[in-house]
Structure formats: C-alpha cells, structure tokens
Image (cartoon, rainbow, N blue to C red; front, side, top):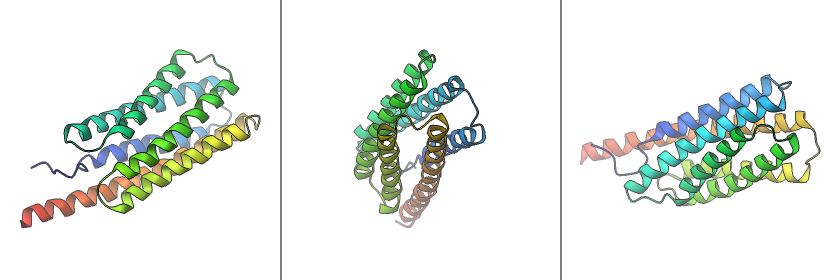
Length: 188
C-alpha cells in the first residue's frame, strides 16, 4: 500500500543530497580546475538536480499535494543546466552571475517549498535552512563579484557540501516518517 503522506519518495532527497556532496567534494579537492571544467560540472549538477526535483514535484502533484515551488525549482535547475552546458565558453564572471542568480532564486523557492511541505517540522526546517544558505551564498556572490575564482570555488564547494548533507539528513527524517505512518496504518 502506498502511503498518502506524499513523503514516500524519501530517496529523492538522499540522491539530491549525495549529488550535492559529490559535487562539493570535487570542487574543493580540485580547486585548480579550469573554469571550463567548473562550468561543465556545474551544468551537469544543476541539470540532474533539476530533473530530480521536477520528477518529485510531478509525483507530489499526482497525489494532490502542493508542488509549485518544487516544480519551479526543478525547471529552473534544468534551464540553468542546459544553458550552462550549451554555452560553456562563457567567462568566469558570467558564470558567477549565472550561479548567483540561480542560488538566489533557488533559495527563495526552497524556502517556499519548505512552507508548502506537509509532515514533521524537522524536515521543513532542514529544507528551509538549505534555502536560506543558498540565498546567502547567492547574495554574497553579488556583493563580492571580483573575489576571485578560488573564493568562488571554495564558496560553491562548501555550500554544496552543507546543502547536500542537509538534504541527506532530511531524507532519513522523511524515511522515518514513512515508517511511522506505515506502522500507524498497520495498527489501524
């Protein structure tokens, strides 16, 4: 029996978190990577993460759950990923602006998504905190655009690690909620 809570896809949070952590580690371990490699890695990450978010939003919509912010987040990730991969020759400053805009919009949408979610507050808080972090990092990139590629790589890597860990932790909270709901259904 499929749970009607809308939280039965806990593994999507885990996959998104793992992708973010992997990307963050690559960025931090390989700081001397060329801007081109960073652009390709960022484009792949944004595209895949956007596809997962869009897929989960469609699943939520099919159950009648709130899905709009998550769907917009997924579409934004897909769009940014495609644009980045289609135009890898853009300069480091242009990449900075693209990433900063993406992070600010992503931050707002994640915060909205946290309010739209149902279930335990702990999961909503983790998603909301991840959104606030994205918003702060995006704003910092706007304020300090000439801070250098290494600083940008460092900030992006740390953000991806923290956001990925938060999403992975949220997945286990969601999985725990699923088990509680399944126990409640079985007891009934």
